[in-house]
Amino acid sequence: MPSGTGCDLSWIKAADGVSADCRRMKSILVLAGGGETDGVVFDTALSTARSVGAHLDFLHVHLSAGDAAVYSPHVDFAMGKGLEKALALLTKEAADRATTSLRDFEQLCSREALPIVDMPPARSDGTVTASWREIRTEAIPAMMAAARHRDLVVIGRFSRSNGLPPQLVEDLLLESGRPILVAPPISRPDRSGVAVVGWKETPASARALTAALPLLATCERVVVVAVDEGSSAGSFDDVCEVGRGLAWHGINVDVKWLPMPQHSAAELLHAIAGEFDADYLVMGGYGRGRFRETIFGGCTRHFLEAADRPVLLMH
Image (cartoon, rainbow, N blue to C red; front, side, top):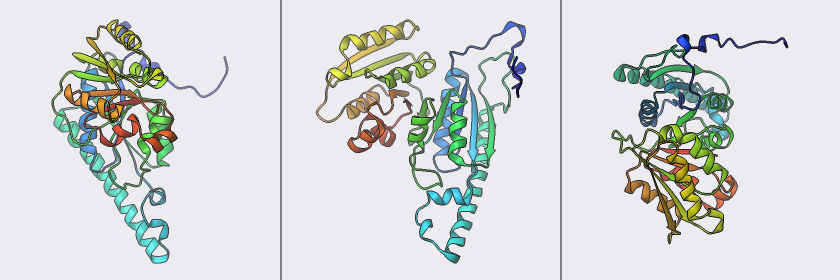
């Protein structure tokens, strides 16, 4: 047997013959920035975790002034005393965000009676648990690695400068290999039990659907929507096959094949999600390539900027 550094996973082996169900969503990464979006991000993550009985792994990356300066307006123009003052301000803002994010985590766990644990129990009863990590390192590689080690990433949309790149959601979507759940602007306290899947005959749509299966299985109804955009979008028969596949998972599913609207497929999908008051909108991300979507728009860009409900994306 080759020698080397091993990872002791013996604690994972469940007692009494209990085995892990690898098909389910059990570990959710929650990116805690310490800013104004944390409240809705935490609420979205908690609601999702409760539906599938998952663990919430909260992560805050404490930014250095140098890292934050890269994405902070006007800092690159500062010199001398002005630069020293700008870096001191960035250092203070990073410390404030770290303090706020930890406080919000502790308040959430206290208010919702979430057990704080570092390891899974030998036998899970579906109780939502939580853990907290604060790390000081280069932010983007750390977040990317953490995302790849979890089943789902919950994140808020960019609202204002916080020392992180404005395109962080897009970077995670394209490079983490994990599904990204983007929180809406405001919390949604009540669940309708309905999810809407925006379907297109692309690998990204297929991956998004597979990633979302644990969530879809908790819904009372799933509506699969496809828009007739021509031959590249597939056909009515294709969408029906998607519905049949979901039915084999015991999911109550409806299928809608719609003509191309006057404006855009994104606006139509947005309207349908609102009509059903969907808890989640599931769709593939950047199906035509990121550069083209940036230039010409598209569903991914539309929902990253304008979604009023949680959107699960997979590239």
